[in-house]
Length: 423
Image (cartoon, rainbow, N blue to C red; front, top):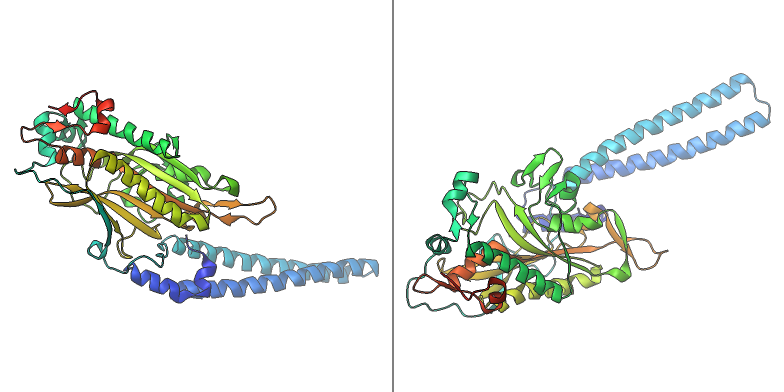
């Protein structure tokens, strides 16, 4: 949620931010409501001052032996003022509800360093690591490799669950598990505190990190107030909802494995074959809660830590800075890490690392203070894939495939796999 004081002081900044994000949202009605609310608040304060003055008149009148008629008149004046205050409070509450609902629809301000752009074609490449392999023969897609080896079973999953689900079998199951454990162990060694979160969360939890109300159609709903998580970011960030943290504890760094569930209603036809865009998938997530002055350094280190696991796996990738029009709803700045996929002939997103600044913290009430007597201030929250497990398996199958149909296991995974070859 955005800071209403910031909007009030510089509404043009928000107009420019919405334009940069390609959002056709007028804030004129909201600003008019805010102006009306402030006028009503002024009237309420005047009425309360009048009520206080009238209350004092009662004491003076009693002391001076006022008649019953005089006392009744003063009491009637008090009741009328009270009724006026109640009516004004009701108007303010109605305005508050409408303004809060509108604020919930507004995306975060892009950071000043975010490049201006319309869509992913305007993202800016920051760096590359590794060189895509020259096979000397036509490499196969991971869904064909997995099917031929009997380690990925899309047909049975479609029969059991529908489209965009997968059965992992045999060494495919072991590879998925190996990648998860390798990621968790690496991040823990880098100083992250591991947590294993619930897979179902409340509506308030989804709202706190920005998934609701805007993206409800993309979520799997258990009942009207319970949802399956789209990412571990949601429960892990909300561990600190409505808390005032000790500033000495910050930054807090967590890593978490979870299965993720996404309906992705608007993504039909986009990479829906194979493991790239599934309704159910595994991911290791990184989450940070920081002080404002720490957050951009922590974004750089989080991105580097996501890169590290790909480097250890020997998978070529590139890092891009997302442009203003391609960033997620809650993000102020995002780096995407894209892994090389030989069958696609291009880089494909495998991690997204974002600084949300105080956007989620305002929605979730995550604050901190340096000293017990200090006024609490909003923390900054960050999240990043560390990284998507199914996409990593797909990248391993494609980049480590051999001409005879086997797949070489990356060296760092051999201790987890108990074999150096998948055949």
